[in-house]
Length: 141
Image (tube, rainbow, N blue to C red; front, side, top):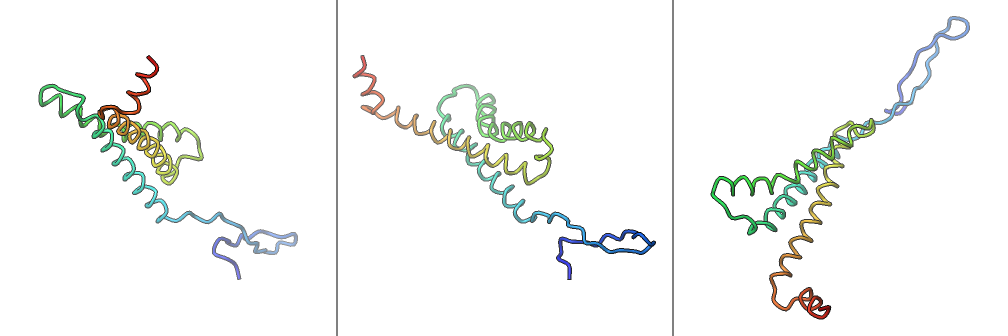
């Protein structure tokens, strides 16, 4: 008779009669969708961290302890940045649930992944002799 999203509310009528009226409740979002957003955010952030590590792997020369700290910082930077952005978004009431936090982390990681790919492409192109960048600079001079 009633759908799953409706419940009955019992109220008193005019002549002390009990009335049953359906009350609409907003359906809950699926837990599977939330889990998929979380897994997707972790995968995207892992890839962004790995590409950040790969793009800057030859930049640092130092002793072993500082090298380990530098590389682990490169790998963890997307996770830390996405966490800060997610916490800032959670100031608003609409973003104070796990699904919204996972979506925010996913799209922040996606932006960082795209920028890491661009950085990796620029570094690969710069190492190639006679690249387009070198030709355009030499023509301008």
